Each structure stands twice: as structure tokens, then as C-alpha cells.
Image: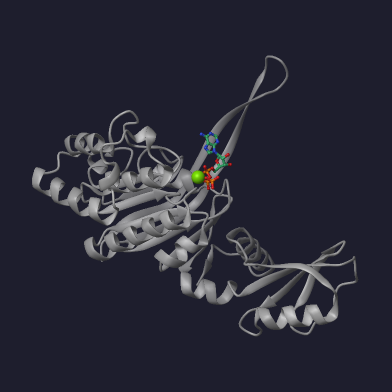
Length: 329
Ligand SMILES: Nc1ncnc2c1ncn2[C@@H]1O[C@H](COP(=O)(O)OP(=O)(O)OP(=O)(O)O)[C@@H](O)[C@H]1O
Ligand SMILES: [Mg+2]
């Protein structure tokens, strides 16, 4: 299989100027990406996840040629992004959830027509793709509407079409589901997995939403503070880390940590207690029953570990164990 993306020991440092007194400014360096190496093969769909400020967007911008690495090498489809940016543009698709590549004042359809000229796609292929995407993403009702008047979910469907109209071999998406409701998220996910399956498009996406990764990707990379902490199969990651649940109970009054068989009280705050349990060993119903029997309950909620929590745990287990480069699964 061909390598579509290859990063070798990539660093990115930003120079930021901060005020030091009234006139003087100090130059400070922020290391956004540190010694990142990975490869993505043709046809893969990979999730790139991590907390705010981890370095995800910086990595994406280097892969698409918007930013130059401070050190290391990047190759995308055999090209060096910053050097061959124009050639690369015609072979990749890019979606930034927080920024638009569409012409704000033009009807959506006009943006697609302009992109047809930018990418110099064949007319027949452009028309066929546009027809297919219009149907898949249900764009028909708002093709004539100026982009500025579209809802976020409609715009995002437009962005996906814009990124894929020229049949790129690789599509890179930075937070494609940010701010979307469940219906639009589902539409975006379905569309991406179909495109991956039917056209063989390689997909790399960043997200805060672990659900996106679960639904879409077989492999994920976790990045934290600029470094890759883990690169492996999503299923294994979930099996190893994703089974803890936390039951948050509000008792009628403050109490000592409840002595429980089904779970363990992690902390208390007045009448509120956080109880962790493993869903492979016990059901939520059993924990709730035991808690209810042990004390008067006013309210309860179950929390799944979010990605930040999972990353914290990986981080903790990593610093306890032997140091190394990333946790291989
Ligand atoms: N243009 C810039 N100038 C200076 N520092 C920057 C710049 N862009 C990003 N950074 C810093 O680099 C680090 C990584 O930022 P980046 O945007 O890559 O993170 P991210 O993983 O995409 O986060 P988020 O989930 O919030 O989008 C952060 O510390 C950020 O403050
Ligand atoms: Mg970002």
C-alpha cells in the first residue's frame, strides 16, 4: 500500500511576542509540535485527537502546506507540502470546521463552479460529483442560497462537497463536526465513511468528539502537548480504557463516602459523590440500586469518560511506567 502522509521527527515552534513593561517586548517560543512521526497509508481513515492546544491544527496546517515545519520532514502524496503547495492543492481536500473555504456572499452553487475552475476538473466529472454529493448530502434545497445565510450544518455539508468535488486522494479535516447537532454530525460521518469506502479516499480528521472517532476510524493518534502519546487501533483503545463510567449522585445531605460493592467513590463534595464503576463488570442499574439502598438520593447522572479524561489516564499510566516514544497498541 502506498504511503499518503509521512511525518518524520516534525517540530513546530511559534515565536510569540509578549509585553515586558510598557515598551519592551520579549520574544518567547511556543513549541506546538514536538518530534511527531507517523505515516498514513492509502485508504486509511485516521482520527487525530487531543485536548485544546495539543497541536492538532498546527499538524494539519503543516500537512496542507499552510505552515512550514521548524524541523523534520513531511511528505504528502510524494510531495513536500510547502514546496509543492499548488500541485498538492489539486490532490487534497481540506475542511477547517472553524473557517470557510466558500465565498461568503455567493450562492453555494457559485462557489462550486469557482472551485471547478480553480481545480480545473473535467466538466463531466465535476457535474457527476456535484450531482452525487447533492443527493447524498441533501443540498438541493439551499444550493441557491448565499453561504452567509446557511445554517452551520448546511454550510458544513457545503464545505465537504467543496473539499471533495475534485476527487482528492486525501482529505484532511480539522474539527468537521464542531458545533453540529446530532443529525448533522451523523450526516457528516455517513458521508465521510461512504467516500472513504467507495472512492478509497484517505481521511485524516481532528476532533474533540470521541464518538466521531468511534464511528469513523479504525486507527487513532492521541496527541498531547505536541507529542504523540498513542498510535493504535480504536477498538483496542476502547476495550482498554473506555469502560469506566462515573455515577454522580446528589444525596439528600452530605455524607461519608458510601461503602459500595459495585463501585468506588472517587470524591465527595457536600451531598455530591462521584462513583466509578466498570461497565464490563457491573451494570449501571446495579450501582444505582446499591446507592439508593445506602442513602436517600435526590438526583443522579452517569458520565462517560471524555477524551481528556482518557488522555489524562494514559498520561498517568505512561509516566508511572517506563519512558518511551508513544504507547503502541
Ligand atoms: N499562530 C500561532 N502563534 C503562536 N502560538 C500558536 C499559534 N497557533 C497555535 N499556537 C499555540 O500552539 C499550541 C498548539 O495549538 P493548536 O492550534 O495546534 O492546538 P489544537 O490541538 O488544534 O487545539 P484546539 O483543540 O484548541 O483547536 C497552543 O499552545 C497554541 O497556543
Ligand atoms: Mg485546533
